[in-house]
Length: 322
Image 1 (cartoon, one colour):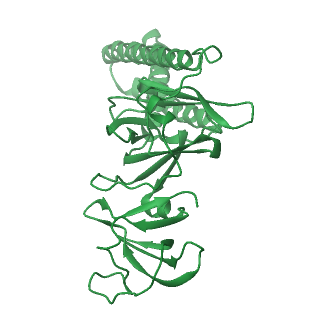
Image 2 (tube, rainbow, N blue to C red; image 1 turned 180 degrees about the horizontal axis):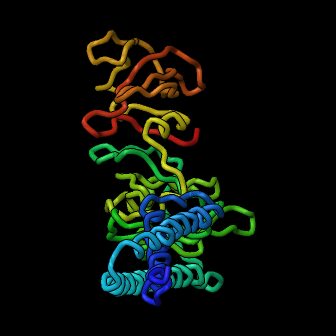
Image 3 (tube, rainbow, N blue to C red; image 1 turned 180 degrees about the vertical axis):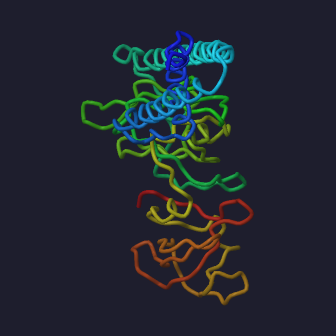
């Protein structure tokens, strides 16, 4: 009993408790135990630390009883070193997060009353014109920012996809606001920003997507120069090409003289003979689209399958509005 109450042994018990409490917190972080858990996330992470600490604290009594006093002293120095390292790393990451939050706050506090800025390219974009990506990489879909919920959308430059969002600093941003008619507009935006689709008064801003990560989405921020940036995955929604096409009011062939309607989604299937002006999408299956053939007055003249893409290139134009 006297052995267990020696000063070195008592120090050993508490060092084991503190070190393994810290280890438990890091394990919870690596496992993502508290991620997307709201207010319960902190309690879950803390629970990992408490469980690890208690198990280590109880185990330390058995260890101290079994091994020599000299080894206990060595273990104490090792544990103390680990505790100092854990504190140093934690404090450094805390300062880093504070710095990033300050940078983001600086973005939010940009002056918005004296000067209303808008991307130069965005001023002249006619959103009612038909869109196509002929001869371009069409990507995998579109990102639609939730600017009803988030006043600011941050753009990130070079990123390390192995790190979380909070470990990156924004490169630029776009700041949304409501005008006197309660329509969305921008109070600040980069001059190079040109989304694939933009009509803020209708709540529409679509950025072409080339990749989706755990925390970040790779988007095209200028449809003319193909400029690439990254955005927070949680700041909006990703819509795949099939879903996007199905949301269109209508689609048309890029070259009606060279493209045909088929009775099945096969190049060698029979052709549908019908006069039509545009197609209303009903189903997207791989590279094929099934839809209603309609005239300008929306009279149905048939149904059929068309290729909407081939070899990564778009074969149709589309319109969000009638």
